Length: 515
Image 1 (cartoon, rainbow, N blue to C red):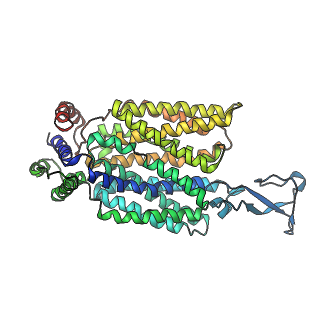
Image 2: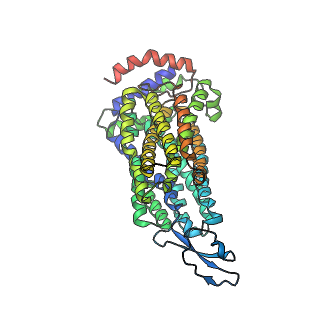
Image 3: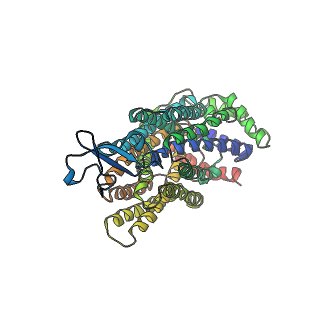
């Protein structure tokens, strides 16, 4: 029972220091600023992969340019009565500069754009996989700042790419940096905040605000080169928060670094204007734990029956969210109207979704809220697919409206799933467990650009897949235990003992700590 006692002790200690005071506000705020770099880096291909208006200059074998009146723009084949001509030069709209116009990615090279996006998402997969192990082995802090450093350097070099192959390689490294960040940042935040405030972390629309801002900055710069420079520029100052943000005290305790953990606890209490709580029992509780020096790996999670079951059920939701979220984002050009306005709307719609997620998380719990939003996306996504294949007077308006509703639902559902996932794993493997889910999500994200490409020729397939996957995810989430008002577990232990201990002790803890 000492493992459970330790979890309760750390939660009580955090409450006495201030569950969400000035210190947490500074640390969480600093960590949230990193999302501006990550959101701009990931979403760069929504603009960078856009196809500007273009036309061909036709020529014959003697390289003479032939002007043909009435030919269609954006066609790779000459009119039937000019079969001896070929496209000798492509002229792109100069008002917008994307990688398509920079590297001539049209006609027989049109697949390259979505392939680069898939390569980027492959980088997220590798980064997530590495960060899960790295964050639990070496700490949350060095892992977090490694992600910022990778993003800074990769974005800066990517701006000077001389061909699409070089650009693709750098997008892979940018993806790695994003994967590292997305794996560690929520775990890092959660471990500084007490239980009743954790849902609030996902209610603040940081990602959606920065993503919506990316639509605005794309409108102002409308050049892939300057967008990479801007992303590097906003990332650089974040490296100086190294001296503000300490290591997670929960990670330090879980790794038997009690003295350093006490220093962090003292710092939290001082910033929040509270007295330093009594931590005399901390060393005794840590020493009483079995195998306190063991270094856990992915295999330890997969060998534990309870954690394996959770990983599989959660994984279905993560891979579905990864596909649905990025399919809608990267398929923005399939919506009617202004590219920049649609980029803005697809991001800003997540602001009310996160507030709804916060409200329902608090009222009905993580599990039911996630289930509800997944069913919502299943319905709206399927509706978009149906409308796309039928002829109706208001077709384009309906597609845009239900696509925005789908983005709202998947944004809220994924946020709830993140919190449910983080609270489902003990501290010693929390980053590994979260890293596993982030990794499988990138499989869905890697598939998304390819389905976007397919949907240009097979109408409705992208959204029908969204609806089916989200329905399956809702059924899987229904089989996962809720984590509402449960104390974070800190060590690996038998699942039955853990559940029994939580059931027996939660009521007493709530009376002593939450009132």
